[in-house]
Length: 249
Length: 191
Image (cartoon, rainbow over all chains, first blue to last red; front, side, top):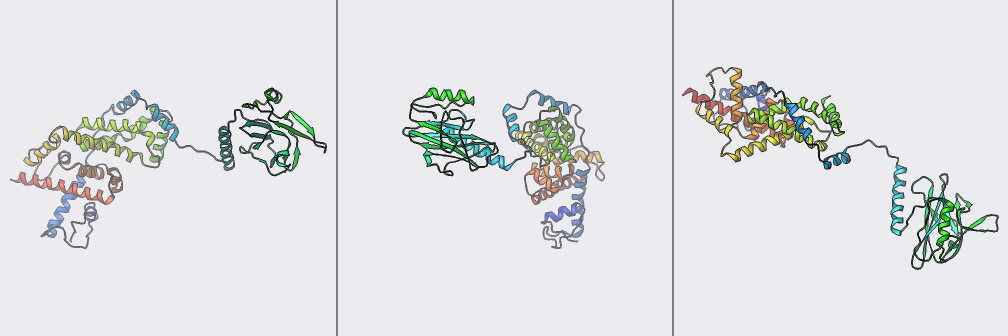
């Protein structure tokens, strides 16, 4: 026999029934013989057993009712309820493509808000915002089937791939903006390589190949034309123009 | 499985079914009440503290993490309340009345009759309840959680906020203090 009484892990194991000798001798208590050690261990075991066997006290009969009454008196605060709403885990399914395009749409929305747009663009056409010397012309084109959409016109020397539109929502609303100086411009959309006329433009001009170019004139005050455009399209489009500006005419 | 059903009930309560909380109270009232009783040796305090623990748990239920054991969480709340209560009691009086009374009884050998050789179980339990009030709170809670609430050392450690080896050390020291009290008392009786 021989317990290291400084090794409390070993003593606890011995108390709990292991009766393990530590093999390190009687380092802890000077002059303690085996009989004394056993007596001490036995005392500790008896106390542990006594604690283990101590019967439970009966819980008062109205205990649960008391708790529920106290809970009923005070609901959780609205802050706690809001926190529950925010922090409760939920199972969600994420389509990564939708997530990315949603993020893109949000970025464009913020960009448009920053640049001063007043109404959303719902149809394929162009709206504009006047700066001091230039106009920001916003193009939109709706086609859920399209894969690539560009706007091409006299403002970019009819280059087909210089002014791409993007579809941030993934739902076929292609949008983009071009900065232009005052003047008159003709343009068309290029949809998956095909030339497409902007049917919603107010003015068109034959292009000499059997198609019609949309005509956009910037720098002439014509708000009536803008309003007429909105009514015609029924799109809710109403470009808000500050100062002198003109819708395609 | 208790753990799973606990989480489901918590979810139900958080969804607005306040009455479902009664099922959790019914499930855990016995261990919580007995924990508080063994720490305070007072049925009134035990009732108040364990009920308060359930009310606190309800108000903080949104902070409960379902991957943890609800039982351990409730125990921790109850034990913290009990510690604060015991600390306040010590501040109000110069001494913990229960502890001092128990200590006086132990010292003078005047506690309930303790037969010299064989203590009957009921009397031994009474002795233990009194003796527990004499030893320091952290040793008391270690002995109570380990032997009277029958928790593994890992859980004792988690509830007490210490390492497993520290929990073992506290249990050992608690037992040792109780043994010393008993030896002293037997010595007094023998005089």
